Image 1 (cartoon, rainbow, N blue to C red):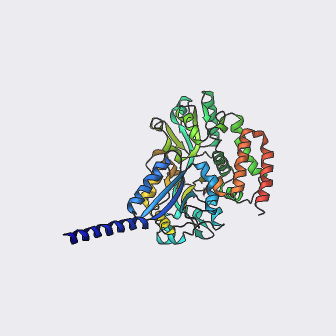
Image 2 (tube, helix red, strand yellow):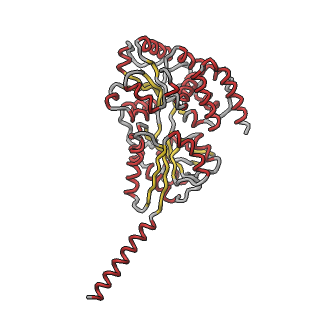
Image 3 (spheres, rainbow, N blue to C red):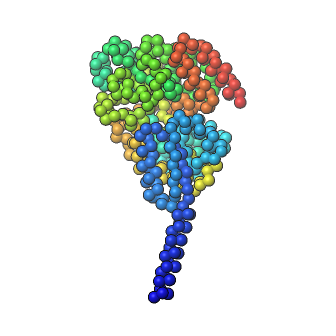
Length: 413
């Protein structure tokens, strides 16, 4: 009996040792993602599913606020980055790819069939013929609007043309309702206005040339964009003190009926309270010049693997998991976005469905967004100029002259 007990004791010790060894062997996978408000819960749900399917991976997730994330991104990639980072497609991704700071994911695109399932978003995921991004959801941009406030102001339907839009703004103002909310404290929300005015006035090809630094900011066509924008400011169609509002603090203006419209991405729908949803709808940015084909902003959110990642093996496993149609669809749904994976279920949220229809029927091209299509230094200076313009629209020429001097310095590099 003593001998048998000794055997069982040794066996138990061995079992414990094996269990401890298995935990010790669990590889740590460090992930850092940008998240605001309800986005964190959506991320976490997907990460929980990954952990359940991959119990051998010790997943460590860090959530960072969006604006702080943008500031810290370059430092992370250059020093001691996590194994996976969330980010944005287009020039935002290419900026780091050309500096050798990202892992090449071209083999993943080939192996996992992404060339087919992500065909529509492959171009902005590509730099110098290689793919560096695993696409997640993307946004349509357009006008959120309060149907009840439109009715109160005597507006029968959604404006299709710029003249109709201006007439509706005039009616709303006359009814004592601020026509347009804009969270101008977040400069990128002003960039959405610039993008759409430029796309509607000058078209996609011109816009992309401007984003690439090939057109002067003193070009009369650029000035026309700002002059058109200035009319809205001069007529006081935007809410008062817009530069004091960010995206999170502007929501109550729509919820409480203080403003009727806001140009924003479909992600905004996910944060709307239930009591407001039935009163809200969404329409495409109106036509300004009927001769210019309709183009849209459709920025894609992505996951990337830093070149200095220490656990590349599990990083690639995570990207493959997140790229599955079901997971891609769940993420997009939770964020109020559209799934990048063409095998994912189509969105059922009313606003997301409208956004999906807009992008799927766009004849004039899909841009990534001002600060995602352009070199970071130029984008930062351009958006700072937009805030200066919004604060003092009479300074158009001074601002555009400054931006042109800056453009010449940046694109000489």
